[in-house]
Image (cartoon, rainbow, N blue to C red; front, top):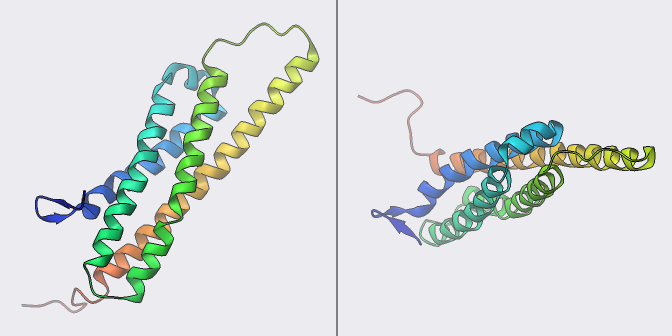
Length: 164
C-alpha cells in the first residue's frame, strides 16, 4: 500500500509506529518487572507486540515508496537508513513479550527446591534486564528516526520569522 486518500501511506503509518513501539515497550517492561501484571494482561502483551512488529515493515515499505517519489535529499536518505534499523528492535520486543507472557501465563507453582527457585529467579531477572534494554533501545531508535524524518520533511518548509 503506497497511498491512502491520495496521500503517501507512510505519513499515516508512521503514527502507528510512533505510538505502538513506546506502548509495547512500556507494557513489556511493566510485565517483565511485575509478573502479576503480565498474568492480568494475558494475551494482550504478545498480541500488542505482534501488531507493533507488523506495522514496522508496512511503514518502512511505504516510506521506501515515498523516498522514490520525492527529490533526492541527504536528510531523506539518513531517515531511510535509520528507519531500516527499527525492525530488529520491534522483533526483540515481540520475542521478549512472548517469552514474558509464556513464563507468567499461569500462577507460579509451589517451589519444591531452592535450586528450582533460584533458576526461576535468574530467568525472571534476565527477562527483566533484557526487556528494559530492548525497550529502551526501541524507544530511542523511534525517537532518532522520527527526529530525522521531521528534519527531512520540514527543513526548508517554513519561515522562522512568520509570514503575512
